[in-house]
Length: 220
Image (cartoon, rainbow, N blue to C red):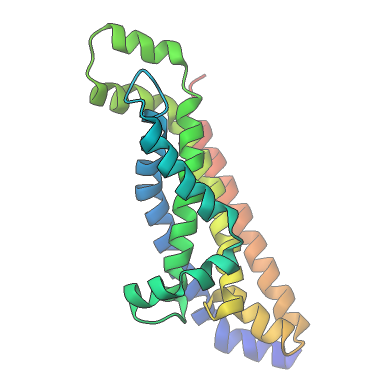
């Protein structure tokens, strides 16, 4: 038991920082690029905007390919890209590259779904008033889809936590790496149990916050 406490005391702070780094980078990438990509998917599939089967098909295929790969396999496949971007394939920063790409693809599909749930009648009413496409996107599409987008971001956060833990299996660092290195390889079940509890708490807290924010933006 004393050894478990020593490991946690000496390693947990660094592991937590690495997980925070990975999750932050991936969340920002997903929120920005995933939203843009999801918007493109929606606009190019909707005849009220810029329906374009070619663009929609290409973007959708790329996203589906990324999402169809298990995350650990995706990390391995993207090693050459990771080395070009950050100069190494090991560590939290390197894992953030694959984590960001997976998160962008994941979130983009959720964003597309959130936009698709917006009442078509509301959009048609805005179009009939002569409002510009950009105005409709900003004032109607995003406003109406805000609760769904927040829920989508919450789901993405939970998934990123899981992905970041898996990144530890291939030298990505973080809490997942701590669990594998000590909890699995060295049979320190106390460390394994502690890391699992921490990850559960993080996920539950993130889900609770996301749900509350989404409810606040939901129109009664």
